[in-house]
Image (cartoon, rainbow, N blue to C red; front, side, top):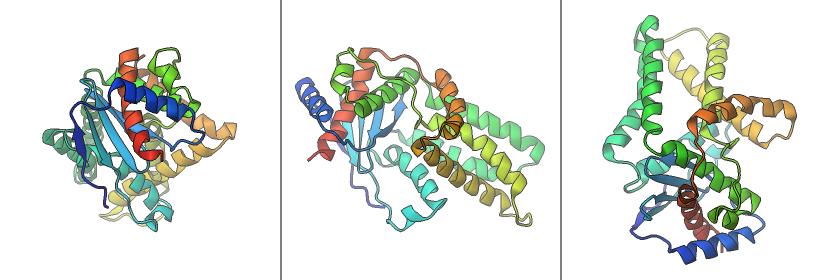
Length: 273
């Protein structure tokens, strides 16, 4: 999946350039859809084509998102797994976004759950819980909780046309997001339990792998449907994740919000003609 090399900008956009870009974006009616992730020392913001990692020290790393073949984007379940992989692309492809040790830990967190099928069932659940706790502790260390809230606020500001006001602290869009990965995580468990109980094929050695992949794909399909549906019943699926965000986010300062907004400005500078 070609994505192009990442490039580091030691200083990043200066304050005047960021403000000019945010003002221009506020005047643009249709901005690209943005997502992101928080790190202990900064915020990643990504569109479908570009990503940027803005650090608290003012530096920025930029890169292009991988572009999988359009054919796979149309296949149910497969397209969901692709979205999951693309969400992690800046961590694995970006220069200085994650250290080699962190990438190894993240890769282990992805692979280890599949290996739990070879562990006795009495031990697999405690091990899975321990792994989840360790992963969350790593993901949410340092100022990550505050920068997670800043990431959500910056994206909400882009969607509400209040980027410039958010930069100055005059607007404070919600730090809770219906598209946050926390919402996805809250849906995975019930979907996985249902898939395990309703699996129609005879149990075989590959069954745990298949159930896990199908569960992730189904959860992503459900998550995408909930995000785009305006029906109130569909919105009920967001309640657990939004409630969980009270634990995974904290109210960011104006300075932390500006870190996320610099990443937004970097992405939009390349997105807007």
